[in-house]
Image 1 (tube, rainbow, N blue to C red):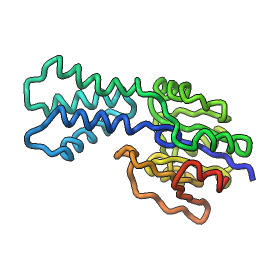
Image 2: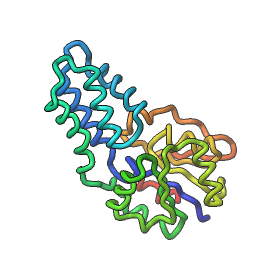
Image 3: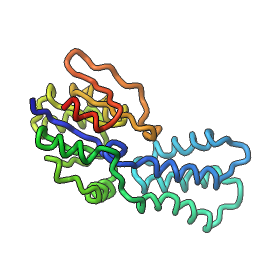
Image 4: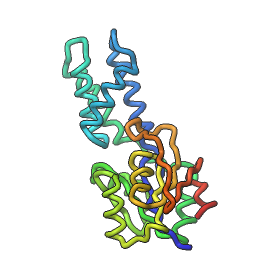
Length: 225
């Protein structure tokens, strides 16, 4: 049976958060706080990111704000420029599709209706999609500011999807799996070891009206669809 497959992008189709984690590691080392552990500094940064929002630009602002809050030495323009470069260099990383993604999309595309669904800054996400070279495999590309149950209800209505044969596929419990299940859709959870900490959440259990699959790899979709 033909299905509607909504597919997340960052850390589902291509690597994303590993570059943020690398920058965070360098930032904490540069800060070298005398009284706070790495974990405590990370907690301050996480809370700042929660307030600032998604994307590399907001991440850069979060690094700068956290540094200005926690720095023990005199803050110089040189130090701020270094912190700024840590965030901005994320834009320059090559876009790398995860193993099996291209082959799996090429397998699924003629069999089902594929829709790319990603959240974040419109220009930033649009650039990633352009660089990925896979847009032609999707029937629709949707960039939204947030993924919650209301977003999924809106997409179902906008595209006239039948919830019983609509699946959200992604790595984030908070944005991909739980709100899709809450909206009555089915979901496929494909965990990624570097999923952003603010996307962590206990995965909901499906109801009698929808389904949840947990797969080890994106390529495993070929077995189920």
